[in-house]
Image 1 (cartoon, one colour):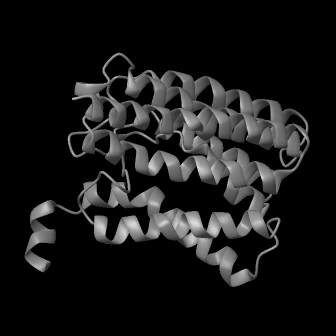
Image 2: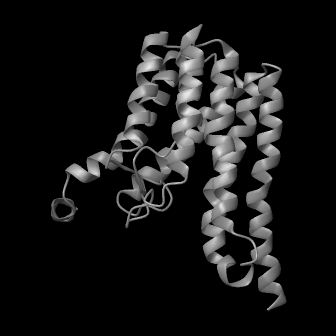
Length: 236
């Protein structure tokens, strides 16, 4: 019993390391060390990918229920997925003038509402509405540096998508097409890490691959809504 409690509590501590990585990331962002900032965010992203399965494996709700793991995870996610990337987008100057204020305030405001929405999870462990993964969006902005109207347009579209009945997968927990989605999510992490280590100076083909993988992760859930499950079973 004590062993199970220690294991379960250790999973909570692993989740809480996200706060450490968040602090290191925002210090780096304040110093405009974007590669260092994203290095810590990529580490936090990786931890977020493994702490959920570990929580279920070691039954944290049973053996360490004095800590609300869901709430802890949401706090860390808001910092790493929303707050720090939004701050970096403003601090970097990628969005000039009023567009910087508009973009980051819209991201912070809308995401806070979305993260508190009790309907954000679907029955197949996907997300209903864009799940506020602004860390991924902003990293692509840093890598590609599109014109500001495109960035503002993407921010507006994804903000609206937060509150639409559109499906967005969880690469680990969404079972459908997971054999493809999970490796591509791992590839995205590797590309993001490569981008940070090269200070976002990537070859064109690497940049293109990052965009393609990002589009897959963004739209595959909507594709699953369009393609019936039975049709997939017949062609499997």
